[in-house]
Length: 225
Length: 376
Ligand SMILES: Nc1ncnc2c1ncn2[C@@H]1O[C@H](COP(=O)(O)OP(=O)(O)OP(=O)(O)O)[C@@H](O)[C@H]1O
Ligand SMILES: [Mg+2]
Image 1 (spheres, protein in one colour):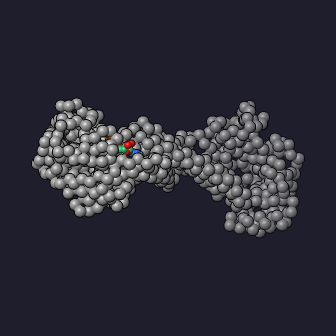
Image 2 (cartoon, protein in one colour):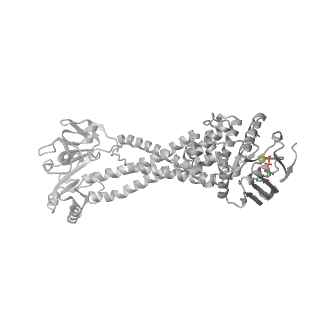
Image 3 (spheres, protein in one colour):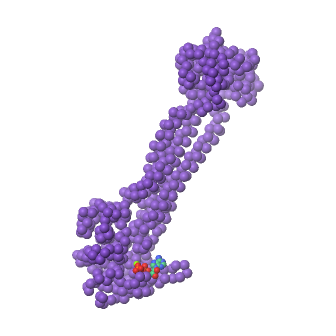
């Protein structure tokens, strides 16, 4: 379980301070499928970055399975991300020189690629319907295929949670819907938690947890629509 | 990660290639210059080993043609204990061979004539031991000449050929070969002809070449000769070695400095290439950090890349250096010695350069925030 407790984030730009998060509290339980919506500049990306250990909050606590990561140093955060977090980005962020299979394995390169890891990467890509694209480079893949490679990469470390920042932002509606379906499938089959930042409200269903963020404050929304 | 580093280099192929060639040229320059300076030294020391005797000249004379000694003193010097033979010599520059002018000092050295007493030449002497064809001068010779291998090659002379030096005709009776080009560039002729050519009065020669019984005692004997004849200076090859040592080490320093500059430019090249490549891939490093790479992991990868850059450059440098030396071997007046250790040093330096040039860019890349993965 992931718990955010009165998390704030203040960016300092020269003399001025930007209060991106003004005390956000949130619980994500195993198997939750969480959507966060909100206007531009409301702090969505900042929130994901803090949940995923890309940076530490200015104040407040971030508890992952009871452990507070808000005081972790850079090295501890790196290992935490490597072992517990899966990231999916808006613009895929694949390494252009590497094949689909290699891209999926990238997070594990520092630990060394074992045969069993490689097998897992192949299976993940097959599960994403990319069994025939293992050795293609990103340049040879469509947007939807790229995002599926990126999802496979997010799963290679068997994460506790997948954090996705506008994962359908660069895809057409049909492809976006397909990507959402893949993530829902993974959520159901593996009881894996997802937190997804999106602008596309049509993907949201009644059973999902929905939050709205505005001016750095998070509000739970009971009804979709 | 190794494979990943290599892929990254392969990605910007042109840039990697240009860099590899750049480092290659620097390393080849290093290998070439160091080998060159080694070769000069080796040739010099080999020549000194060949000259085992003592050169007696007029005190203060810069070179043999400007030295004048009394021929009668040769008998007195011959009496010094340990002296085997004393050969009075008259030397001069061959300004013209077979009617063709020899312009200045050419790259391949210059030719000179050496007058010796044909009667005395029967005795053991320096050039006589290197006789490879025909005979040495002998009593009664007037127009006979013994020529060095280099001259024989350059002017296509054989035993029995005629050769004209500064307007005087000689018949080639012998050819000697010491294996050292400048030693093999002399024409040995009867001393009376040489006297005419040099315009020296009777009883005067340029120098004495003194052969000793035991070359190890040459220094001591030279000292005795100088004590007995204060107007003369007696030099052994050891003395020349000391005199030349300073010159040689400045040549060495110069070559090393040039090689050092070449290597420094190579290092700056690596730095520049890696900086560019890091700047282009900022976002990628952010992604690597986001998916769990530590700052050290990123640093390690970039150092690996520049290590490979250095390794490839070193390999290219060894190849280029080898080709350059092989090319120079045909043109230079001395033997080119290319030692494997210099090639190994070149490769090692190149790798060190590669890694050193990659350190700062690697550090810069490792300092990038992981959050740049999420933002543009
Ligand atoms: N590195 C930074 N330095 C200074 N201010 C920042 C920085 N990153 C974000 N901000 C500011 O913090 C606020 C929240 O930014 P954030 O990126 O979290 O918003 P967002 O909801 O993701 O917006 P969008 O929908 O446009 O992606 C914005 O006002 C933004 O300008
Ligand atoms: Mg955002």
